[in-house]
Length: 239
Image (cartoon, rainbow, N blue to C red; front, side):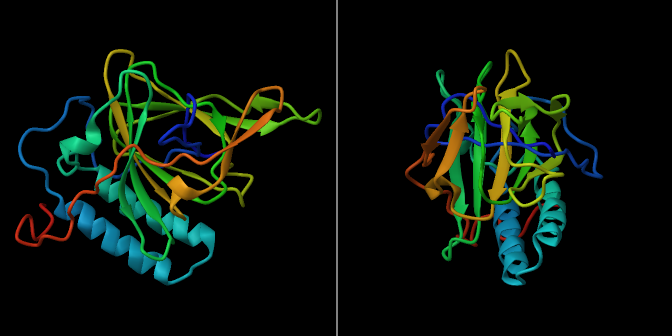
């Protein structure tokens, strides 16, 4: 499976894994938040490009490949995420909605992982892309065994800043079921997730290793969204 990760009970915000695709630009390594006002135009530009991409209704492999390039360009810079959507919770990872397409075709979510936080084994049921913005994540893919259990598939994959991974229920080579955890023991990690649906409203499942399935709908950790459309502020993306 290509890198994608998720851990703990999937309350408001959680996900699975895929293989990591390196971003050509030099990845940043600091787990610290950037200083100064965020360049929110970067996120607006990404949302506009992604909307144009899904409008083409390409085959899923092409959407994933082109979407990974767009997401890689976004997470190559750690200067655009508003601090409100980068806050960890002491008990569980947070899933902050940054944008939901009005037609339900995609959503963009900030996953914020406190030290030691992780998802349970879970699925997504739609295509997804995960871009590492800050810190690092470990993603362990799972596959169902002949007796119905879930077993780790291959070694965990660690996603570093600037890298992108994917998940897909339609491509066994990518995979849709995984478990994700913060790879940093003493710092917060943040990844940006894109899904082919309004992921917080999608019925998905978490799994025990014995095969037990529990349906869930994750929802989101926030009730307000970032204002991407005030062009008087950061009208164009910074270089």
